[in-house]
Length: 465
Ligand code: FUB
Image 1 (cartoon, rainbow, N blue to C red):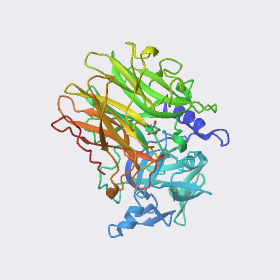
Image 2 (image 1 turned 135 degrees about the vertical axis):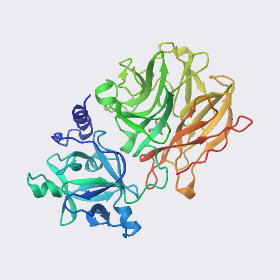
Image 3 (image 1 turned 135 degrees about the horizontal axis):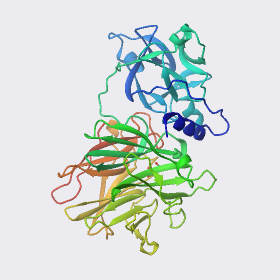
Image 4 (image 1 turned 60 degrees about the vertical axis):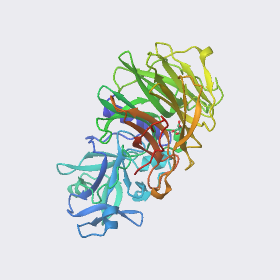
């Protein structure tokens, strides 16, 4: 799907029936994600900033205070209401949004209104290299400065308006001092994998109330530090007939030259059950298509929610599907990767299991890992057990990843693990409450080292900023 078609499709999903569908700006641009400052084209030296939670255009110089520089630095992230556009996150975790057409700084409530008011689509600005920002829900308006205050005003085709609504992206006034989330913005439940010389991350898109996001993106990297955004790889609205929302916790596995994406989804019909599906693609970055046109595991078939799938393939080539919330299940997959024998489904019994099963094998030992507590609880944490086979039996070894309050790290969980090929070096991808200002629906993805002790146990993982 091209950029315009995707924005229209996504906009029609997020705006629902109460809001007029935005027409796309004539000349769409793309922005780099990550930290930037925005300088007015007609007032060089004046930058977009927030002061007392209102948007302004103020002078910033190398002699400005650290606070002023920080207030004039924003992280450009995946648009909260549309992956084809962008949102602007301040150092305190809040987002620029318009309210009564004034630009303000507020925490993401996750509602459709907030997400739309905080999403801007870039078009070419008045001078080469500049951009103008169009509110996704008011395509006839643009973010502009007026008396050095920031507003979203009706577009006027005059040189003055064009200049007042054009900004250059500059290097950020406040450089990044921590590794931060490895992918800018709000994402959760990362599934990390290695295919053909690249690492891939497949997260849940976060920042939506009730985790209702409808789409998945993929990211790839060669060094686990610099990640490329490959855009939307599966969108429940157009791509999955039985799911509209709750695009949760994907897991991708390569098999027979194809890539299988296991995912959860819910329907907008009022039925609150989630179902578990499988999609297939010839590429790790999609596009993926629903392989069955129906759920692989229908919610309600087994106790607990049919969410959080994960596939482990053993050395003998046999693949196993794990899933569950409240109760954990495992079943060998058939060779087609999209079916299994229901009679072979087994329940995994480990104390503390909540969700997010993950299995790996090292030196002949199988490690079954999971998340404990509620993802909205700062005590969300990762525990593990070991066993002699993909089916157990499992012996609980304890908690290996938990909050680190002295750094403001909370809610560390829903992880996955990748081995650096040919080495005994392992990395864990997981989410935490966004730092700062996050919560159980405003989460971010990070990666840390996971080390095995000489006896095969996992050393406590040290979460870092
Ligand atoms: O992101 C939505 C849900 O929150 C996931 O499926 C759970 O594992 C929890 O992280």
